[in-house]
Amino acid sequence: MSTTEAPKDGAAFCADLVRTHDFVRYASTLFMPGPERRVLLSIYAFNVEISRVREQVSQPLPGEMRLQWWTDTLAGAEHGGVEGNPVASELLHTINRHGLPVEPLARLIEEHQFDLYNDPMPSMAALEGYLDATAAALFSFAARAVARPSGEIDHLARHAGLAQGMAQVIATLGRDASRQQLFLPLQLLQQHGSSKEEVFAGKPTPKIRAAIDQLAGEAQGHLKAAFELLADVPSEVRPIFLPLAHVRRELHRAARADVDPFLPVAASRLRILWTLWRAARSREFGG
Image (tube, rainbow, N blue to C red; front, top):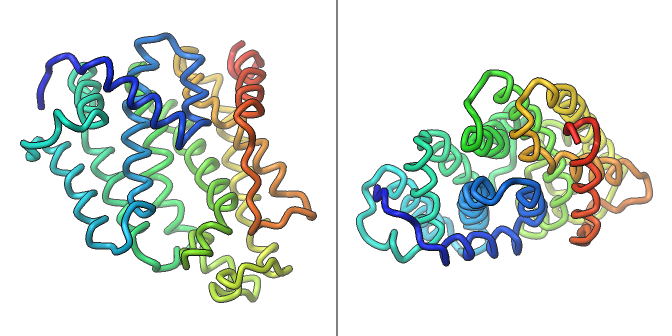
């Protein structure tokens, strides 16, 4: 891995990528100092690249190849193309400058292989494992880039990742169903007498609603735990967890009985900025 200074245009590329595809995390970086913001955007841009592979391929094999390229790059085995990839260049600069471990990112890549196939998420335990290695790991890795690692941060990151990930499963149910994907655990659907076929039909039923409500309840529990743990971590880390304010709003909306879970309504960027700004000034985040 090269330790040379990453070019500034790579930083701009990462910022634009995150702003376009993950505006909530992008907005959270606005509450960080400039150097830390660049570091976080390189990590979040990497996450965008990995999480969007499914959208960019029509078959699993090309997706596997893209993920393998990233795995090789992190391992230092990809000798060509890194300089031409601004996200890879920025990420490797971040890893080298801050002495960050690549193992969590390698596991994140491996877990996202699930996205390439249409196997349903089988159980709550499987979903929690998936989110531990993806959303929770991302919170933890980002925090490690700006502060000394600790058990308290990792504990917070796990609850934050589970809450955010479960909320995202609910928010993207319609999109996923349209491409025959199921992240809502099959176990929950079956407990309430539903099935993946019913979800793929794209029409809300009381049984699907009951499964969603149960998942939302699990997410609320993790969100509550995360907010309680915020006070235990250094103040410079807390802005990384500002997306939880948006998660809280999304879960509140999902709980409304008149909301069709198959018709997602994207929050406006202005609303997201307002939500995170208010949260940053709140007692929860030490504002």
